[in-house]
Image (cartoon, rainbow, N blue to C red; front, side, top):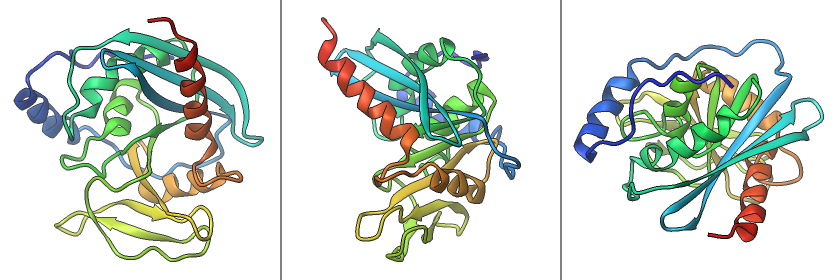
Length: 225
């Protein structure tokens, strides 16, 4: 996959926050038209405090069949700081994506613009890969939310304090907790939800990120550190 190196990753937290504010203005939100062919799911785990494992799973959109997988294992020194997750995980994710073929849409285990400065992991990496990216999270990081309806496929808007739409809480199965979908880059909230619902199988989590998570856990147990 083609990746444009738009900035370095090593910086102090105050510099990272300032960078996020500037990157926010570079994001593009638009309808996604047509049907993707190949999509990717991305997930990261930590076999140890100083090692990150990023997995990219390539999936055929219509069948939700896994085609191939790629991963990268990297030593890291950046600590976990809320709101700055991409600075900890981003370099390893980009190395894994660099091994992947081109895809039409990338799904991330994390947030897009539903983030305090509007640049979650899906948005941040979306600027490097210049293709539609979607954040899919299991919990809400930022924004206000009313109760989500119970029926499968129903959703409730996630709103910023100023009323801007940040994404949707989406019920993928009746009787289970919703997921939180927000656009990363080059897609809007409605198109992101539409694609996410089309990639949900029998489980709460859509197949791209679910399959990526499964592989991170399998590989984590096999790594010799």
